[in-house]
Length: 401
Image 1 (cartoon, rainbow, N blue to C red):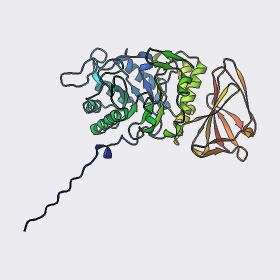
Image 2 (cartoon, rainbow, N blue to C red):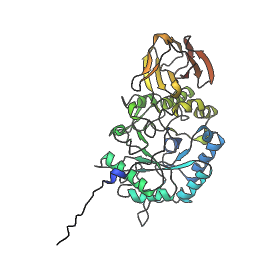
Image 3 (cartoon, helix red, strand yellow):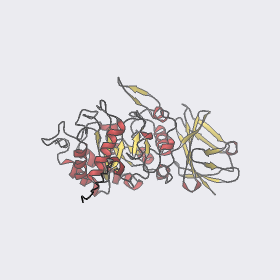
Image 4 (cartoon, helix red, strand yellow):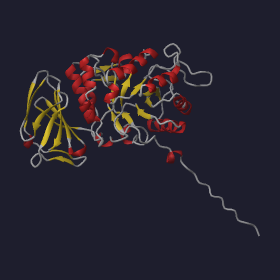
């Protein structure tokens, strides 16, 4: 009698089990990136100097931890085995030695590459080399990867980023994966399980509300970026953030505009990635960047992205629900002159319908904390009055008494 042999064949999709590294970027990442100020003009001594300034200026103590090299760190060609290599003139000691230097200071190390055949500046991209490149990053102890979208030809964004996510996971070293495809393919709809943050616009530039054309693409000022996307705040949360690009604080705007910029990135739960030269930063710039009370709004554990509450009488008013039934509220003077604020709490129904949060000032009293001036302003039983300079901000935290 013949035995019947039954063979079960089970097919598994690689994406069934492959996920991004969990437990990273539970609050928006804080750090520094080289692009805004230096573009591809970067080198080993510059980066070490930036790492030193993290400690000297109190940035590490304020919560900043990632130092990320953007485009231009690698040689123009891969080696004979197809491996990425550091530019031998810019980085003679190599990436592993630089990572060791940064790690020795209690900081984390990040690199840049691109989903296309070439990076945006023409260096070797990762297309076709994703797993090989991920193994190189792991061998160098890389903690953060910014992954761009130039020279991608007919690639589909979601698939390309899934491929690199899977490659990073296979390499075994936990890496924050920062998706940088400029929001063109609506990553907020698909990237929650792929990356830890995704860019929602094209590149920022150091101006209040301008657009600077570069032929087929543009750079955008702070308020152009803020106004570019609608109805995406519901997609952000712990471990998956809408990224409004690296900051331009300290790069030529006024101190008031820098404060507003920093306040808004904190309200929007965007990664706080500095883009200035920390070695020559003014005291006022560092005071803004190291304001722990403002940073705490960005790092609130609820991870709710703020929203525009009103836009009237030269003021934009933004709200952000916080843990422990607290709220952040930001008044931005959009005019070119100093304006007087006279805000009557009882006239407004303040709440966040998306997250089911309400601030009932008729039945509850909240104390008011001015975050930039770090002083108390009484409570909501009285009107809020202030003089706010052009393009400046009053950012407050409201805590229930």
